[in-house]
Figure (cartoon, rainbow, N blue to C red):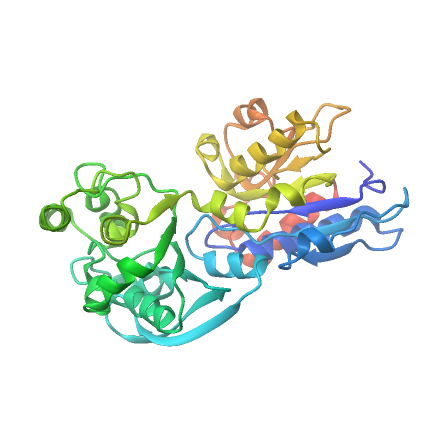
Length: 397
């Protein structure tokens, strides 16, 4: 398959969790794409900049090498800060704050104009806590409050908060305590948008404690205690405000942090991937694209339940249906051959893949698996091995 006539290629992959970041996956794919034109001038590779939509120019020459644009992606979890700052003009702010065990750490958040980009995993992240130290009965979201207060004192009044990767199950009580009485001013003066794909309520068998606390070190007794504590906090809060948002989808995100933002700050919850795609103007970027490549660590039926590749596919198919562009969306997640078509290809590129036919039926024209059959998972998860596997499989397409 020759790509010489392709003019604009967009690479927008999720991270291969526990292996490669979104940026690293994108760069590996871009390296493989360069091999398509090894005998010609190497394609130009760009990372999305704040003015990318206006900067991108389509090459006029039919035999010109393609322009490659990489877009760092996140669904609101770890890596969310980097993803948003890579696509929006802003500054990175570093502060001293506390982790979930109240240990001093350095944390970062972003400021874009008058909006702060808060990744709660920067302070309340599970990855910051040693496995043997994880205890959601003790873990606190205090550091999230410190980040918000720091931004508020800098004059920020709008917040985009990524809820993901938390070590806490405290319903945001620690965050509120860190704010002191200032939470009332913040409630009046600030707006919050939550980036999260979690739709769980705060309490009950589908709530924060039962679904997520075991992953954070809770045993069965702790889970019951955490759920009781969350229910009591919601009851007290509902009496204070006169309304109860503990059943709102997303209230159970990040150990109940979603509830605190919804109940105390009237936050709006949105799918993390959709929020990022809107913020970077993804629809405008793909209007004149020839190929869009997306992917993730492993693709299966759950991919089609709102994960990043499926959301990318939806945007691309919408453009196809409106006949405003010719876009090929590729998610590397299989080794099957797509049928020849006069329409741009839709590919799915992942480390591993299950339910390949389901993905093809959903609209991906090609599903490409990065990891060779028979390679042990622990070997495939090594960053250098994964990077080489990506480059090799893309180079040969």
